[in-house]
Image (tube, rainbow over the protein chains, first blue to last red):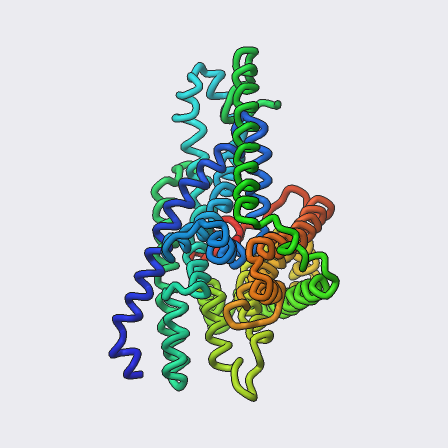
Length: 216
Length: 286
């Protein structure tokens, strides 16, 4: 009990690392996922097939195996970075494939008739994209993307197994030193995660509400 | 190529341009692949010695044993979580606040907490020591709580997806609440839910690998002992990942087949964590 209170700065520090991992990986996986998603629905068939294969392979690999690739296998090939970079890399590689799928499903959710109607009333290609297709696709992408980001936030805990002292590893450390308070320690760390997850969820809900079309 | 939202049907000029892109992309991809292979070769990673364990019967057997343990853990946790999820899911649909509320709390909590955190807690609290339950059951317990909570949402959404008239008609015939649920609503809901349950199996199977952190048995653990012995990290990672992917692809194929055969185009709408029930949202992926 005293340990948890007197060393609360360690708890905050651990969650700060969790948050860093989350924000960095979110940024890179959104960028990479957007590129993958664009190639997945684009007109070049080779890229379509290649990204589909890549996305299927990574999505069906456990995140822990991706971490093993980045942390254990890649250094054998002479590719090595510091821990935070490796953690971000593993999380981004994994999460970007889910982002790609969210992007694809968002675009697929817009009925083809919308594009046909936009062109039929004389909008240019760019105009139809900007005024008709993308606004609808982006709205449809928000809920699945939010789920992906929440999953990413929880997945940062896997980094604990590879020497990053983020929240889950810190909980293990605290519990090892104060076995009697394990319930309190668990609840403290769990609540930390719950708060972060609820914040992401709240943000997504606000975006969704702001962009909601009146007629729907 | 059929018409697409994102680009017009290509004319002759665009088709030539796309052909150019296709050729360039093919070359780039082949170059990338060659680069990887050359890198592997330059580091001596293609040496027979490093791949040998995977055609040595003893190690193949060890890998298969790990795979079967992984499958067991996943199957057990899915089994338990279906029961757990069914209880929680129906509790969330209850008319009584004092049943609905705790169920909601439990579901939200376990959906928002990382599975690994749960696993570590179970392991340190109940898993170690002479009278501990051991890492195997810690993995199963953590996965049951997490997947059960996800499935609770699936069940709730599935039952809600049955047309309201079905329940009303059953009540009109004089059935009790339990009868309405068991005879009318659940049998129809199960059909819609099965694909979601199978995709949850994929999630459970992938998450069993997290047992690595608490020294649980399974495919990943076998992989670790192989690469510690032979120093063939790259090769082991490739083989183990391939095994996981193969099993998951089979599961996904079954889910797709069931979806096509029994459900059709309809998809379940499961809200994400922290979202009001009834709102939109895709199924949770991990």
